Image 1 (tube, rainbow, N blue to C red):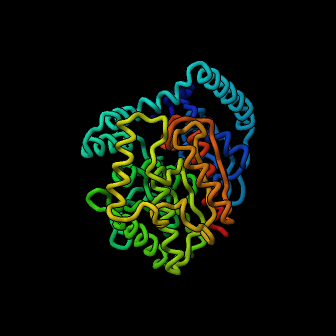
Image 2 (tube, rainbow, N blue to C red):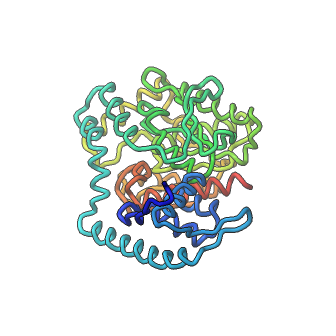
Image 3 (spheres, helix red, strand yellow):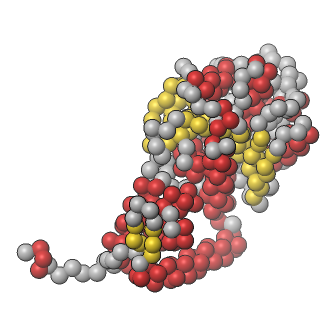
Length: 388
């Protein structure tokens, strides 16, 4: 009979770091919701991790009720030792990183296929294929649901911890207006959705050179106005982006402002690029690609038009900005110019810098601690804006 079977204790080797991180977060917060936010995972995913840990150790660690969470005596014993273990692990990783900056080197190796093709002046089809391969290699966070979306006639994806929530974050991806897709960006947008506890929509706006200005701008405006049409208060909407998606984002809010459309509450700009001017340090091939993307996107539009050169525009009345970048990124000068320009026009800017060289380092959240921290901060910023 089953009751007579000798139950051997679970092996400690089956316990993973994620179990301990989840347990420590809940034990310190004594609230599953706050702990889930802190770890940028969904609450159901966090509950599963805690349940798995309790099965592995063979006893109850947390006493839950509808009103409170409390540590049991075994939980108190584990908490002290788990915190020591995680601290020692952090110290070991920090010391390892100081020897060779392995994680940043790993990020550089991941981007190498795209960088090498750009330096060799490869064709657009090759660049697009490489960019998609790199972007799509990262996972979608556990508990995030990915669904097709149609935002005002612009197809794309919705990523959310709760698909029943209305979309409150519009994500306009980077790629120099010629590369990238909603599918490729589902990992980064999904991590942001988990961190913010929000539904994020990623429209597949039209790309140059097949569709020059204002095709992408029209698609972005359509997606935003679709969000408004669903009854979402504009002040609770955030627009998030990376790299040259910031150029499109700023063009969009400038057009919305000039057309009298209510503006979103906040803009989250990760490693922003605002002009098609290559940094001095890039090689000739990559510089030609950047200039080529700019020429293809602008088409017949004058380069000094403020709508396509944001740093020539009057920013008065624009939403507040959250600018997050690596200070050693070759594109950082553009982020600094954007910050100065916005502040000169009375726009509030929150700056979140990291001593990193990787462009759009947030993409590497599965293994780069700074990226995970950055997304958590961006999520907190979006969450605060949604509750204003």
